[in-house]
Amino acid sequence: MIPLTTPRWLTSYYFVRAGVAAAWVAAAYTIGRSTPLFAAALLVAYPAWDAAANLADARHSGGLARNPSQVINAVVSIVTALAAALALRQSPYAVLDVFGAWAILAGLLQLATGVRRWSTGAQWAMILSGAQSALAGTHFVVKANGPTVPGITDIAPYAAFGAFYFLVSAIWLTVTRARHASQGRAV
Image 1 (cartoon, one colour):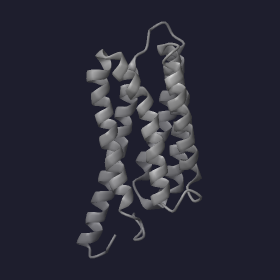
Image 2 (cartoon, rainbow, N blue to C red):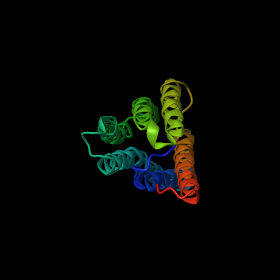
Image 3 (spheres, rainbow, N blue to C red):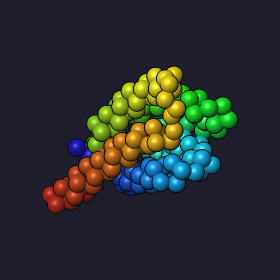
Image 4 (cartoon, rainbow, N blue to C red):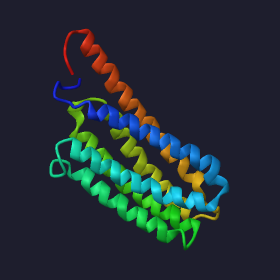
């Protein structure tokens, strides 16, 4: 159940996160698949966007001091964007390794944020997303040390699942708000 003090920000934030992730996936499977320079830009932009989104959410959800897991997640994502830019000069394996480490750390931090926000509602999807992110990161690290040359389409399904979980949370919060409104309770 959503407490009456929950800001509408969270619903909008989840819809935006879902939309940006879906657009990134579409770009990865279309232009990114065939244009290496565009793929490189996408691979740096994805964690950079995650950093900006986490900071924006932390600021709108009580401030940076009250949201340490998101602040740490933003720092990890900034470092990841820089590391991805450097790894692009080395090899696709190095890029996937960077994304693997990021997915593990960011997933655990998202899981922590979901647990902390449990009372706001729809956080079960964020907790699942965080756990799945950590598992996907482990898969990336294993695959980065395998024989098959990785590419952006190896990372795109990870982003697609992120889009799905953000969309589920946004819809869940929207439906809950509509139910409360129909019962005469403001949310």
